Image (cartoon, rainbow, N blue to C red; front, top):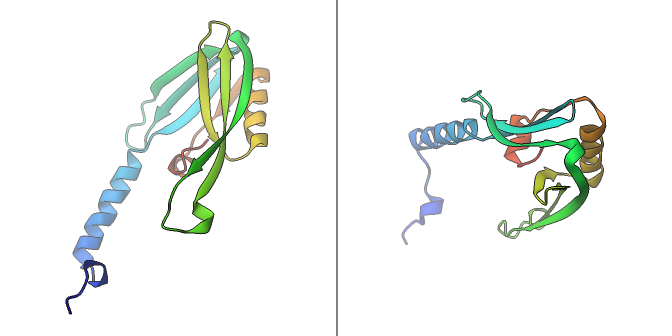
Length: 140
């Protein structure tokens, strides 16, 4: 009987190459941040290698007509692992007076999303710096 591909041993050289590729890919992962000062907020991203921020969006907090905190349910099939099948995150949807809407996502709790929104509109110098570990989960 022939051995299946998943029963064969992986050589150390092949495992090291895969590990290096994964580490390099993670270093290009975008890290999102929000900075608000004097009623102006800027959303930008940067990566571990490219530290120059990339502009994503800009808005004035005084132009926010209303906001909503939405629940996002991500269904995925992770090989039948029960605790990985369903993930709930929350996002802040800002409705501007111009009719445009800006989406700031993903937060792990509704309280955290509410706290971020309150600080964004009330603090003169609010800063929410993203980090590498939160970016792995696509959250702030």
